Length: 58
Image (cartoon, helix red, strand yellow):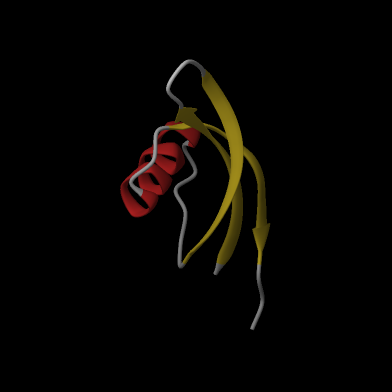
């Protein structure tokens, strides 16, 4: 499993900001664009980038 920290876009009434989120995925692609797409799909957020990926060994 992989622990992923990602940056996503938050749209407010008068501004657009960035926040940090986390998600756990069973597997990840070797391509960063594919990882961003996977995280966006799972979280239903507008993911701007990946900050950190950690492998979690059970």
